[in-house]
Image (cartoon, rainbow, N blue to C red; front, side):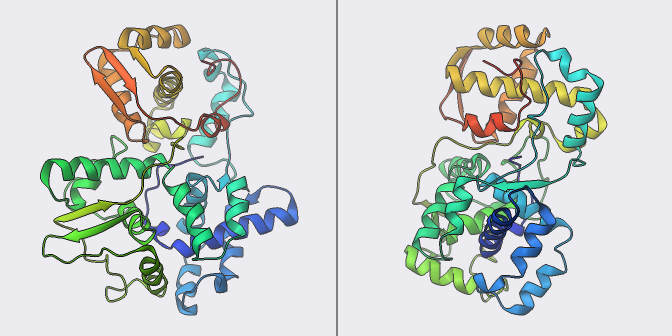
Amino acid sequence: MTQWLARSEGRFIDLIFNCNWALVDLYKKTKSPILNKDILKHALTKYDLGIRFDQEWDWIKTRADGRYKREMCYILECLGLALGPSLNNLIIDSYSDFFKEDNKKSISAFATGKKQNVYIPTKKGFELSKTKFPYNDWHKIIVNQILSYGYFIRYLDVIKEIQDSKGTVNLIDIQNKIGPIGTTIIGGGPQFIQSTFKEWGYYLDIFDIKTRTGNSLECDLSDKIKKLKKRMMGWKTKINPLYNVKRNLEFIFKRDLVQPLRIPQFIRLELNWKWLKDFNGALETSSRRALIILYLNKNKECSFKDLEDFLYKKTKNNTKRDDLNNDLDYISCTGMNFIINKDHIKSIREIDVDDFEYYLPKGGFFKI
């Protein structure tokens, strides 16, 4: 399912290309979904598709059975290059259907990662696999997919908000606001997803960066590709100009978002630890937020009362205004954006409904 990417492995841009190639190649041969471990294993046999030193591939291989196999497949999903496990084998016609024992077991296995992680390539995945890294045809597709990933757009939104109010940006300010709500990093914690998003944005020519000292990293796409090739040779400071770029930054944006946006899906509309601690509460929150997303994507503008009445009709539960405000704050981290004026809500971005509904249970509950 489309995820909240939360790790830095995505900074290996050539590995994304190789994993997509591996998924397509294996799927062509088997005509069946592919396990995440097999995708990465196959990708690492073809390191010549990228431009890394052999020893760096060996370093990645030592980690291939753990976080890399998961994160690289999550990235393929988030970029619309692959489809993963979904709940579309369930039939949910009413809110009470969620709490039937068989349905609860299926949703719990999905939410806690016990469901088998298998993937199939999308049309865009096939298209990307036919390109050559890191040239123009590859760049056009990958940038389009990144700029339609809602969580990355949230990252750009936060940068713009901070820059508009303060003039410059510190990376710590971004990671404390990007969300999802409930995962705020207090203090100067690790970079995590910013390592990925910063490199996607810069090396793929989505933005340039200036520092307060006057050091400018501005350059055109051809120079970015040259820098990317050098970057793929390693990650040490002398090779990666972004390594120590952290404070008093000015971002120069060069490309716009691409709608509709792919956003984190049903299970990810509540935090992982809440599914483990309070399954029923997490299920209630996730289903309500999914309904809000679908309703606002279709209607665009409504009053709070209209939305509350709709939710009551679906769930037979009264939604407190504070809970609804918290839901909107959480959903805004997906890349959706709202203008709220007293009792009126206006949604100003389109989501990819087909992608969102692919991961939902079937049945009438989520029909708007």
